Structure formats: C-alpha cells, structure tokens
Image (cartoon, rainbow, N blue to C red; front, top):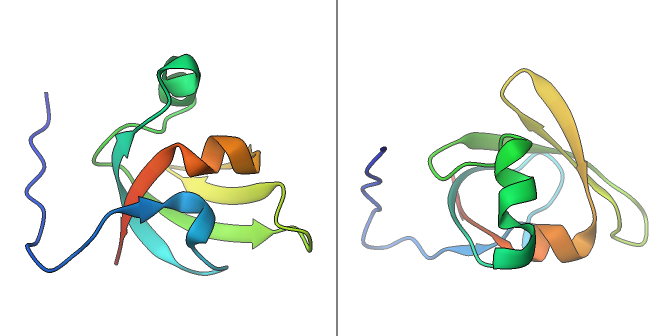
Length: 85
C-alpha cells in the first residue's frame, strides 16, 4: 500500500477541471460505483497523469497514465480527485 504525503498548500480538485497539458497526481476516487472500474484501468491513488486531449464540449477527456492513453467520460473524470503539479 502506498502512503501519499500531500503538500499542505495544495487542494485536491476533480480531474474534469484540468486543462490540456496539465499534469497531476491522483489522490482519491470518490464514486464507489465506478472506482473499481477506474482502478482496473490504472487510475490508482499516487499515479501521475497528464491531460492529453479534451473534446470541444468537454466530454470525453483523454489522459496519459502510465504508458497508455485512457479516454474518460466527464462523469468519470469528476470522480477522480487530483493535485495539479
């Protein structure tokens, strides 16, 4: 189990609020209904990610996590809390 040490001056925000090119660390998954699905896709607390693409209307969002690209719906991205780097 990984223990995250968060900086005191940083606030966790939903992934859906990031812009293209932003980098972040996943802090938590809020929606228990889809959290298992997200973890199976590599969205684990402590993982680094980069926002690769956001569709013109904001849905879907493409993120680079690990060595692959992952497409997320906006409702899934809202459930992922991150700290922007």
